[in-house]
Structures are given as C-alpha cells and as structure tokens.
Length: 106
Image (cartoon, rainbow, N blue to C red; front, top):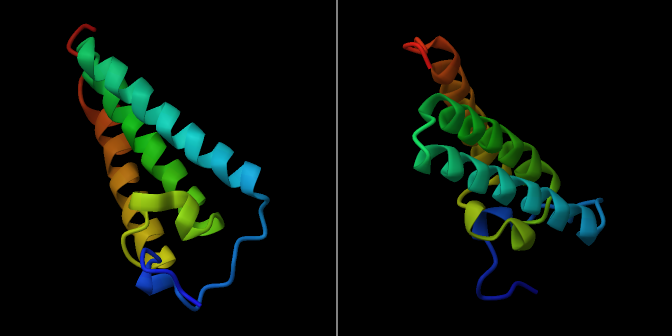
C-alpha cells in the first residue's frame, strides 16, 4: 500500500538491497558535498565550487540508483533512471566546465 508522499514514478520499483544506514550515509555524503561546494562558492573559489557541485551531482546519481525514494527525499523527482541520467549529465557538464575554464592565475 502506498502512502500519500510516495513518489508515483517509483511505485513498482523494488526496495533497495542496501541497509538503511548505508543509504543514509550516501545521502549524508551528498549533502556534505553540497556544503563543501557552498563553502568554496562563498569564499569565491568558483572552479573548486563548480567541481565539487558536479562531483556531488554524479554521486547523487549513484545514490538515486541504489537508495529508496523515501531516503533520497526531495531529490527523487521522477523515476530512478531519469533522475540518475539527469544528475550524471549535469554533474559531468559541471566538472568538465570546471576543468576547461582557464584559472586566470588562481
């Protein structure tokens, strides 16, 4: 039986084989990456912030494919596959951008 806040795109998806503590650890690592990226952005280290955010999004794709939607929470927008592909493409573009932009002496 589904609950009112369940992701309707994941109703037929089998539950994750990972224990809940491992799923929460994956989400905590993603959130830590967001904090690190924000810290770099606040201190105006834009290339590092872009790289950290891109790497965090790639990690989110792994978390989205391996964790339950209830653990992922608001980051579970569509189906697992769509969310993972979207996060991977966006994260890959951001890491490429951070590597390809000239450092301008920094």
